[in-house]
Length: 423
Image (cartoon, rainbow, N blue to C red; front, side, top):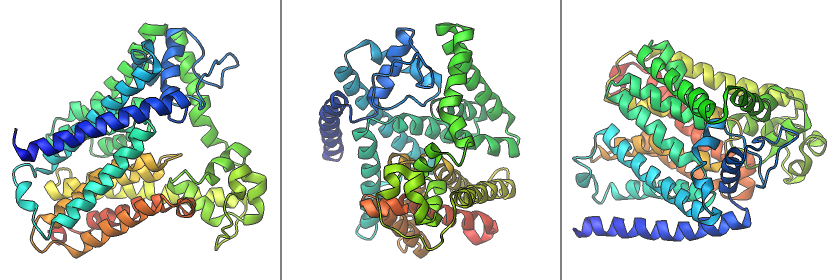
């Protein structure tokens, strides 16, 4: 094994060992999300209630299970072994998923052959910045034992097959991802607009398999229907019931970096916070420049999300059916940033999906010796906001959303220009 391959292999092994020890310790103390997954699998194995919305729920974790029923069935094999060992195995699965995703991104962008030639003095700082962003996003997910690495791999597989014009497999993997976490479903409006019927068929098959066949065979049709009804009540319905204490407390939670929550925190009248936000309403002494009522602030957040989504639809319609390589990468980056911005309760670990648009920018910067000024500025601005959200006050201000928003604006402008201007 050459030195160039030995160093990365040793680093990956060290990361695996260290994060496995951390994952095992955190799951025992109940300070990661894996215990939620683990006990959801246990509930399936023991035929117990899965969602806390049920009066008969036995929830041994500190957090309620909010994922679709399929993920609980998916995780059941790990729930058959002691939780410490299961956490270590889950950590390894997440790390391998991340490495697989990076491999796919390199293949999608077609930089496998000239990757070494790009590592020279002028490009090295940008590659280091990209590596720092990717490492930070990875560690955020590994420390919290999140599911996003696995979902990101499924999304990357969908993008890879879409790039290869293998539409059925593309839709299938995106559908699989949406059956674990709902927000990758944003790809399906694009499939519908471009009438990629094979992608829609693949997504439908994934839905039937993950929401119908797998849980139906394991638990029976009636139990499966009941689980999905409870999942809807636990996860989807609260977002359809604004002007409630739970709704406002969620919007004021500084950990939430989705666009709706950030806009809400910027415009809500300070005097209403204690009454609507619980402890989060008193956490920071920030007086917003606009002072709106709870109803008005919620409406403003919805309008912001609606604008982002409608812009996505407009540019999806405008984009040619078969864009060139640059246009394809810009389009997918725009879809991914839109997905992050409008996903409810998006926290810092959601931003692992931004590795794709960050990589596209870094690819454009290092493609030539001169690089591109606008791409450099966008990557620096996005990186600044991403790292700044680690500071408590900036997290409350929603700097995580600003990181995604900088990328969203850049790619929206690129897609809105005629193709000849993007060259």
